[in-house]
Length: 185
Picture 1 (cartoon, rainbow, N blue to C red):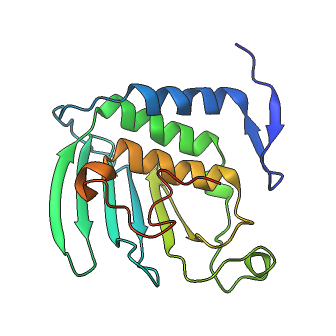
Picture 2: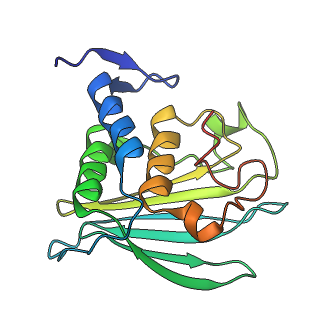
């Protein structure tokens, strides 16, 4: 199937085939706890979410290419939990993040000039760190920054989905944007 070039609301190129793959990952990942595979390359994804001026839950979610998931709640309800994802789903997620242009994305912190043009106050931040194929890149994203590209919001949602954050949070995402899992603009 040929990819047709489209752009996100921020003007970044997005291939239709990437979002078809992303949609299938979100729809088809296993809810059961599969066994993990060795991750000799050290490929991994970490999503960190901060507190807001409300009830947002702060946590760090790390998924390695072998399927091991570590969830650390970092606010007053501090906990450490583990689970597993299908290694093939994680590998597809890493490849999708790479092909979506993550390694070329800039950060969107609250203080940035671009965020001040499309800005809401009192929301949490997210930080995505990806180590893949001997490359490492981190992107900070203030969730009140509506100028951030759709690709970044979708990457955060995919990580929450494959990493099963809703399972660890028991449905309590907190605040209006406690998690982009259900709130992609």
